[in-house]
Length: 304
Image 1 (cartoon, rainbow, N blue to C red):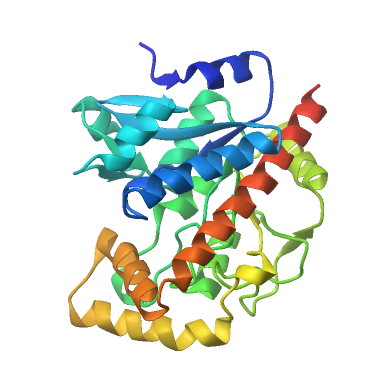
Image 2 (cartoon, helix red, strand yellow; image 1 turned 180 degrees about the vertical axis):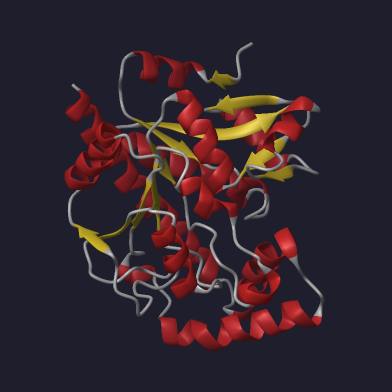
């Protein structure tokens, strides 16, 4: 039984050992409204192509795990309703029931590994939620980074999270956290989180070499590359802090919990920033797609 169904373009790229970059699909189904979600998805794919790699947007459609979508599939997914949000725990159930689901960071990593794709570009990873010492609300993304041998390029963990605790958990799990081109880890919408990065690398080639060396050592899991948002698109950490605090209070007041917390907070922050947070989100995703394509190219050069 074939578990993964690559698109024709992705299948050809993999067969020819050309660089491929995995992309998640929850940003399409749960992150933006129609038709902006489709426009941004196409922009991200175009950015990957323009930087020398083949994009592989991943989603489960009618029970089939697609690695790479045709433009028709992408458009249909962008308009679909009732799409599940898939992580490690519910991905298999969605597929076995023939349903449609969009992949989070964790699920995208699983699919990328199955398909033989080593690089994945996203916006920001999940992490330890504030108050996790009471709620135990910790994203499966962190565990997946310690399981699946995929280099994930993100603008850090989402700024709504407890970033110091997120870094501590990643350290415990043995996940390399690499800041690209600076000493601090970024905080999604902001270039700096006020936290020194465990590792720093300044070139895509160095990042690719580290990924390959982990494989040669037989180390499980991938590595997290934190790529700061472009300077002209960032929202300063000092500006965001009170906004995030207000959005968090609102979530508690409305009894929001579990998987609903992140989308609620992102929507509330969008409202409180008059849309600036979404503009920043788009800029950082495109920036991550560019860097991921460069890393994928360098990996192919090493393998060659």
